[in-house]
Image (cartoon, rainbow, N blue to C red):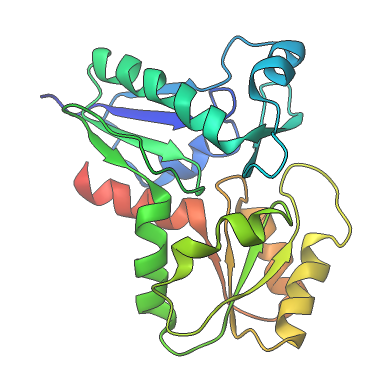
Length: 225
């Protein structure tokens, strides 16, 4: 199968915030096909088909108009399966999920599926060792729903919430500073929507090194392309 990269965002494609990070490290001669779980849907249709359920795990993502939406993780995962099949039918040899959330059922028939939630925890665990990791998630509700994926860490992480998509209280710099005060020695921005300006903001607020999820994943994917 010829090399072709597919990306699947849980929002709407293309992701103008993430694609430049990928383009900076991926080979120029590798074709790309970008798709989104919510492509072509209106806000009303998204609210109807992907509304969070009581006690259900949540995801947050960005639409083409720049607005943010919160969706139910299970509903999003179910819809993502058909999008993966579409990307395979388009000839994509590698498909990258543009989401760090945990998905338990996604698979491809032939294409190589790269899921950040399967790569980041062991890779970050190896990098930080016995240090105290502070993790910034977009939604406070994700502190519990996404916690299981961080079992590879030598020490339980500490968390704060700040969205890359909307202004929240506390803001990212404040959330990063809080993690530093609580003992974090290195930070991870656990969402593909955090970009370089967010890394700078978090580093300025905390004085700590900051791992940017999408940059790390992009560099790793470049090795197989």
